[in-house]
Image (cartoon, rainbow, N blue to C red; front, top):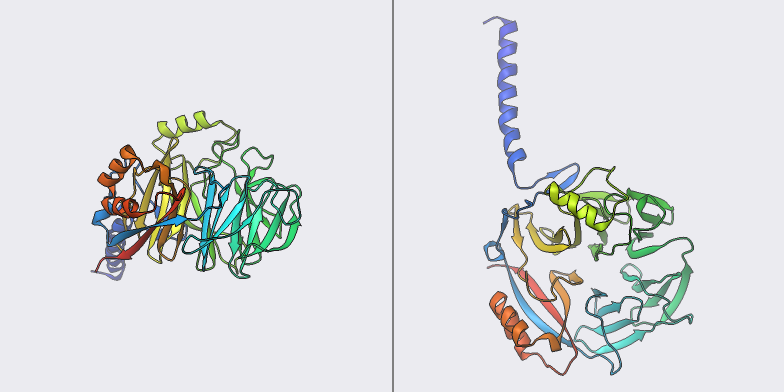
Length: 376
């Protein structure tokens, strides 16, 4: 074999080896690339395994919230965040209630026009670096200490937002879908537009929750197929993950909800990703929507597998929730634990049913705690 033929032979061998190595990466259910983690859940959900097959187990606690006598929490329009010794719960355009980790009521930041009140509460987030809570209203951002004592306010002229996130000195606003801007987000203080709006952009649509904090980084979703991560030192958000079976055509915009859902259904594409939470370094959770119906899914990066959420089809568990230190929190109105609902819960999650059976019924609202840990 001469030198020329030898070079051709070795080049062919290298090409074959590279092809063999590349095949598994293309066939895997998901993977990490320079574009982030690929979320490759099938539209049919056939590659989503039962939670029982995962490396994790979950146990439940029911925390009775000691609501003041005249206070109510609307189950469908609330936000929750847990930080340190505090639990924060808001109702859209109403008050922010603060509890300790046992459910004891601490304070209320009321709605109103006063300097230490909230005008049109839209969202809030804890500033974990400075130990304070920042509340997004229709006209300003108000800052309070963790116990609810007023600190200061900042006007937000010209920003029409529905949700709010914090990363270091940066503030990320999710704009209303019917805002005049072509972008989903604006990032302050540099006034940076971010994420070209696609999909349903004709009317306002709130699909909470979009922001979550884990280890000082902000994770969030807009209306594209991407999950972003913004750490304090970053200039702009980075793509942390993306959904394979979701619209990526930037030309699909300025259409209403029904039309967008129809287009996605025709192409076997999910309409949204939201409620993205990081439970630990290897476990994340999110909701994928088919039409208007959401499906909660967990992804274990160690096993590279998708799993159903253990509370799938449990009433009210699809509502807003929060994850902190591997524990998931969501609200459940105690009066809804009636015969029909309790029987359904007993079938799906018997351990949760047992915890709810023991919880005091005189408290109007329960906070469900789902503690995730690895199987021994």
